[in-house]
Amino acid sequence: MKRYILTRLLSLIPVLLIVAIVVFFLIHLTPGDPASVILGPQASPAEVEQLRDKLGLNLPLYQQFFDWFTGLFRGDLGWSISQNKPVLDAFLEHLGPTLSLSILAQVISIIFAIPIGIIAARKRGSKTDQFFMALVMLGMAVPSFLLGLLLMQLFGVKLKWFPVAGYEPLSAGFWNHLRYMIMPALALGIIQTAVIARMTRSSMLDVLSANYIKTAKAKGLKQRIVIYKHALRNASIAIITVAGESFGSLIAGAVVTETVFNLPGIGQLIMNSILRRDYAVIQGVILLASVSYLLVNLIVDLLYGVIDPRVRLNRKA
Image (cartoon, helix red, strand yellow):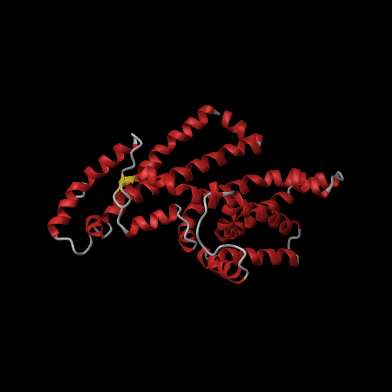
């Protein structure tokens, strides 16, 4: 197992190299000059040119990339010119809201998605199945920002159950923190619920038609044992896969949601950095997000061996 983990971690290096190259050159080739944005429209060309020299923007692109990439091995993601601090510090300051939002949204999606998928699979073709699948399609079609605005209007403006926008850290108290996070988490979680519920239904249908499930039923096992002990466990490989992928996509989906609800997370950091042409922050945050996504996939892959012993045997082979 240790050798497998080490091999997977080493395989991340070429992936991250490709991501770093693509992100760096795409950002630097897009229109916009950070020096002009920082100094404003009143700055003279000489002042802009002086700042470009100071920031190293006049160096050849390959030299800028080499300096940035070699700094990554020292844990240096660069310096944020808009916030006047290291990129890693800016990332960590904004990580809390995004991580809290992603975890809460994932918990909401799993709590609702798996029961919906199981019920829909058990009642295949019935009105219950059609109703749940209609909700799933609706959930997949509605954008997160639109759903967030609807939730804001209903629960924030009319019912006044939750604050319309803003953020309170976890240190201010769990329930106070939850009041600010529940609506954006629902906006993201409902969409992920649709994705996971659809996969759960599809996987359960495949398993429920297997011969060993028919044999278990013929032996007189209770329906609950057949569904949750035998069918769900064997269907969970596909469910875990899509749940892991959805958790990674929550980071990208949080950009718009955090903007709508004014959450000071990674999404807001990226948006502000794009507007200010803060290259170092954009590069560093995207690279860290890619690392996080790859690590989540690694954890999901390792969970396969816990769920299905045959996966462990294949790895040993």
